[in-house]
Image (spheres, rainbow, N blue to C red):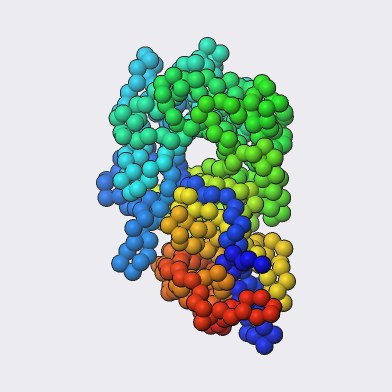
Length: 549
């Protein structure tokens, strides 16, 4: 038998069981799962103001979000987001209170003007953050919009007014809408040097918040309306030699992607509608610039806890059936996230951070997400921002504060880089018996493993429990000599803090309510002196060393 597994376990012999933790992890290096693309967040809606603050404060925010540099002690300066999501506004900001959107923070400017000309001085704060992201190494950008420009909508607004679940776009403006998007892609690249690699023309078209309005920019749409618009956008992109990928369809609920949760067939069964060739009216699988990729949001599917698993498995089964990849492009804390008190009131602690880390784990491991993105990078007194802002009355200055939520995301975004391959994990007890889905204990340990394109291994461990936990590891086909350990916890300063290193075969103690990420520093093969052949197969030397991290 040929072994190709990197094994996170201690060699199990009867006289050592009493000393060993109850769980051992094996990373199956010959069983690659999905290739990871990007971790990201959006500029909504704060960057239109934060991007006009004094430069040193902009730089601090940008360092937290985008930097891949370290402090002198090796602690990361930021969480190293690899994709930045830009909100293309529809013009509610120019309408002011007439937009029927109460909060100025939720209104957005539009490049297109009423006279048909484009003003490339609009959305300046957001564009400043495009530049700051690029300066810190971000080279993938996603443009999304909630509504067509107000000049094209049926009600002259960027928000729906209870018309039902149909697209707020006049029949005669479908082609104009496509042309607008092409002009935005070309215009931002020309004026800012930023290429939008991806475009999402529709945001939560199945979302009921879009149906009742007005709250913010947004519009519902049926699958047929979406397919019609995307075909026209694709044609416009081809005619203008734009290679930006058009993404489908930013569903507000995973269940609408494979079923009809709180909607009907016109807005549900989205995977089947867009990527089953039998769906002739809505099929987009042969449309230029449209990858075989669905994007959706993980709102409303996190409680009760069995939903975390079951809904994502159903989603993955449907994606696999139609050979479609998946990105999770938006989530935050909502009213049904009762375990942490719902979305109201900002939380700087590990309470929200661990809750979100559990969602990330399930989206990646069970839904097969290749990209994972948070909603707002900066927010107010609500659990929707990685960073908390405190603006002055002018909105043009203020203060910002980081959170454990941001650094929890950093355990993934900072160390799992684009192109990394996720590896399956097998968990075993001290008797060598496999623990079904032992990589996921929703109230205890949850772990996932990755290999970056530079060969570095990454192992993320979440401890949701209120007590310390132990695990062990070793390697059969070679020894990773050193792992650097980064820890995020409620302790001051423990934000991806390097807390030491692990050598081969050491036992790890992960503190209660914390996240650690182990990153390999050196890889060598097992020497002949460490390896012996026996009648039972290949035996590998093992050590038992306790290491608290």
